[in-house]
Image (tube, rainbow, N blue to C red; front, side, top):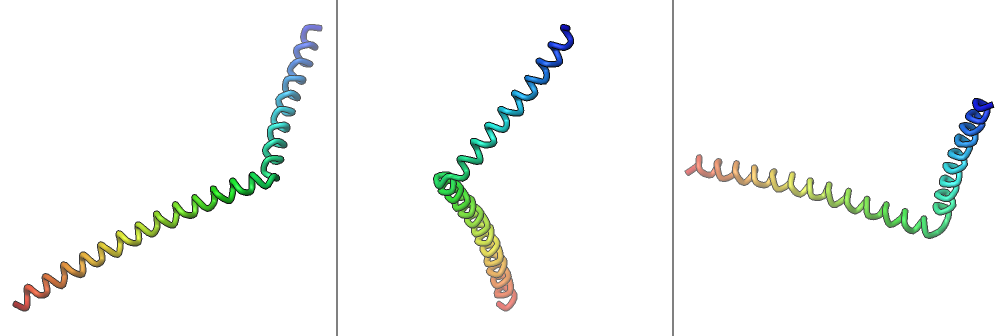
Length: 83
């Protein structure tokens, strides 16, 4: 009889855990369906896009500055050979 109670307890605990996960998932899905969630997600996407754009723009600027410095170095070296 004791073993039967343990089996029932384990089954009820497993079902309770699944119901908790289902309730959590339905809460998240319900929140995502609201307009507030859309606003928050839109703001987050915009911020992430801005950060990515700034990061790559800074990399491009650094690359262009390095190219400029190398050209100036070569022009100065070339001018020194002609004098």
